[in-house]
Image 1 (spheres, one colour):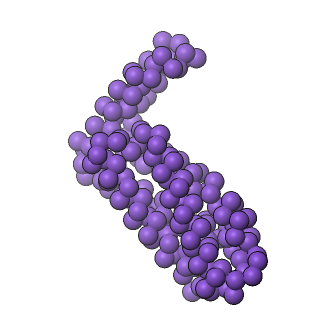
Image 2 (tube, helix red, strand yellow):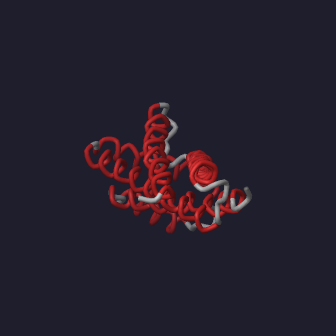
Length: 170
C-alpha cells in the first residue's frame, strides 16, 4: 500500500471514530446532533483538521516536502469517504437497534418544525402540513442516507481548500 493511502487511511479511521464520539457527546448533553445546525460547523472544522493534518503529514514526512494538488485531493477524498461511511454504519446500527432513540429523533424534529413555523413564511399551511407528515414517515434508512450525503458534501467542501493551501513548496 502506498504511503499516501496509508496516511489517508489512518486519518480516515480516526475521523470516523471522532464523528461517532462527537455524535454521542452531543446526544448525551441533549444538543440533538441530527437536527442542530451547529453540528454542521463542528463537522466542517473536524473534516478540515483531519484532511489538513493528513496532507501535512504526507507532505512533510512521506513525500519530501512536496504535495501536489491531486495528492491533497486524493487524501481528502479517502478520509472523508471512509470517515463518513464509518459514521453512517454506526448511525444505522444505533437507530435500528434503539427504536426509542429514533422515535425521539422524530419527536425532536417535529418540535423543531413547530418552533420554526413562523420562519417558513414561503410555505402555505397545506405545504407545511405535508412537510410534517413526510417527516413523521421518516425511516432509519432515510435518516442514514440523508446524513451520509450531508456529511459527505460538508467534508468535500474542505478538500480543495486544504489541497490548495498545502500544495507543492519545499
